[in-house]
Image (cartoon, rainbow, N blue to C red):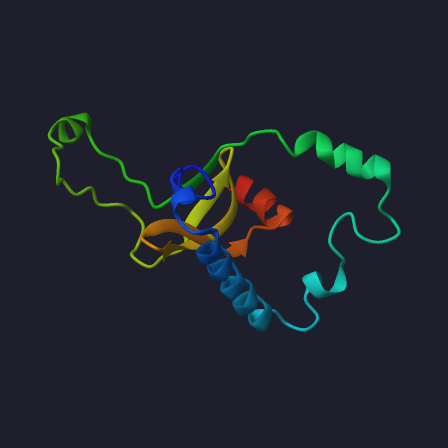
Length: 141
């Protein structure tokens, strides 16, 4: 899955996705401590500090396409085993069942999440956003 929604997500009634997202937001709000950063800082672009020039600057990058990848797991397989794969073959991944999936943008980890199903369509609910300092720490490994 390389987009935030499957290519055929338009087949799912918008109300179902909205309900699933609202439920996720409610769960996240309940889990968020009272003094968390999202309660301390207003959304970007809100308030007296926002100017028309700043809004124009962010508008320049809003339409730039990026590659979003949801990674279920990885494995290394010798070529001889790949050539033996057939329909119904099972490839064992290094990830453990139930482990959060990595969400990468242009190859960089930005979040982790879990699979959700809405009307037989797959999506991903983000459970953890990687902070810039955490991304820098991971690059140093």
